[in-house]
Image 1 (spheres, rainbow, N blue to C red):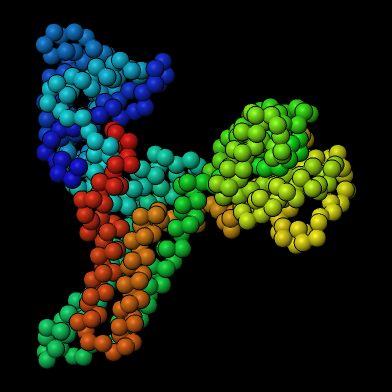
Image 2: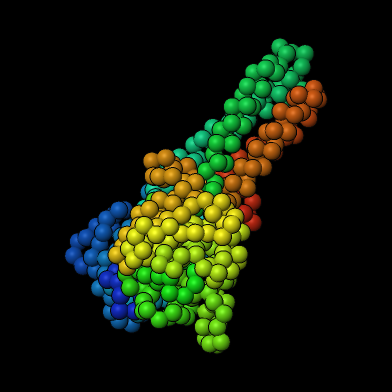
Length: 462
């Protein structure tokens, strides 16, 4: 993918679904874009073909003159475009046929079908954006909550790239000072080691602070998987329905109604949460229910957080103890449901269990009571508190975290080298390692394999 510049690329830049969507966009980028546009698009009247002007007209087959679509066309000439190349967009009628026909005509006129993320890759290679901004674009497109989109927008505005570049420049300045003493030792005053130590400590402190955002960044991007488990008829499905404010799950008084795992996606405190309502866990001879019970156990095992739900009217039962023994190694919140049917009831737990369970929430799902308390407990369990976009301007992703960890280790090694009074040549080895790692984050130093890995995750047309 790396050496793709010079060719004109084309792709459908909007989601295309039959009988849905009023507009479909076909995007061209490259030196042939304008020529292809003039071949395919007829703008009636005296509309000027100027950059950043929307033209109205018709797309026709260049040979047969058959009308393909009535459309709008947007010209964005280099360098004032997303890719810093000539870019043309055909805004066609939505659906499948019109955009596919326009796409095929562009290919017949010499354009090549774009690879995933190739438009954004060209924006990076042409210096319009850095690598953190490119990743933020992908994160913005896939954001599952407003908080995640705000973090992506902050990254797109350079709020991560700016401090990383400053840290790298500081390391480059230190390296220059050290190498100057190696090459011109007799002509320069002695190196101020104390100043170097202070600078390195400041850089290391900021690197550590940025690294600390990795977990919450991953939480905002990937979300949290929460499994509601318990024995049959304790109100798991009612809890899901009350929480999601929908009738996703069938609720009856018959135990074993839920036969499979039911999923619902919610957003709590800016965090996307995938809620899994599972079949009641019990021994059963019913073949279908037995499959559902096994899937429930698998869901609990894969979940980030388990909501062990019990019935307040029945109290803690032997069956609850059996389920608890299967999930107690997971992060767990005990949900005491149906409290409206057993007001003031005190639950008695077997010896030891009461001290093992740290978080308990009381709910009456049938009456939509206790849901806010449950959400608060979930936020506390993942140690996020009241997350807002305001204090999440920087939230690094997994690639950035791994690279920044390398930079941190290299900086720590430089400090150890100084403390051990080793020659200046040894200082430069790890300084270069830190500079290399910091440069990989923003793309100032990056390999083709890294770019391929990043941009292959983009959708085609972005």
